[in-house]
Length: 158
Figure 1 (cartoon, rainbow, N blue to C red):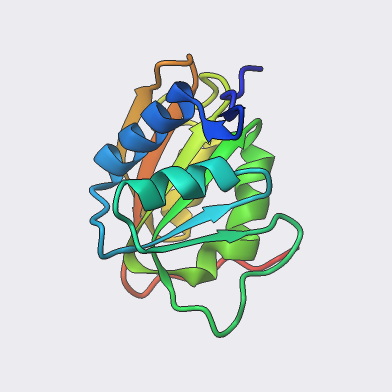
Figure 2 (cartoon, rainbow, N blue to C red; figure 1 turned 120 degrees about the vertical axis):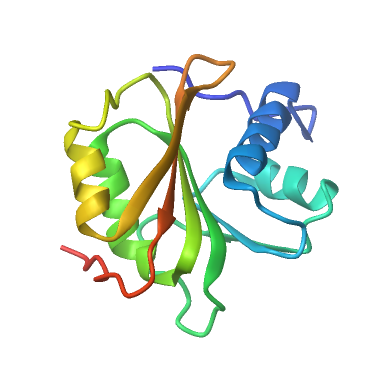
């Protein structure tokens, strides 16, 4: 399992910056969008997004629901996911805080999901997400991008 090295002397690494740039590209996120990073240990990604001109960036900690009063995110980034179960758990906790039309970008630590028949693709479709892109990143992980359709059924925490 390969994760992205995040910091070198307190500065986000080039690999982390490159990954964020790729996630911005495939999500088509704009600097005016509200971008949310789900999970802990991703302060370097938040800093990188701010350095790229994103003014509305938040991190939601794993194991806690997103703040109820927080505005819905335009883009939700799930980083260093090791399994489909991790995605499903994150969606149950944070999916309701992604606005209809918003973009979900998942970064798997390996090249797990395979094709449209993969259970995660079917699960995402069942919750109103339309897959828009799947690609391998420079570190050998898999990036998946899906758009949340209007009028979707919200995932519920187990």
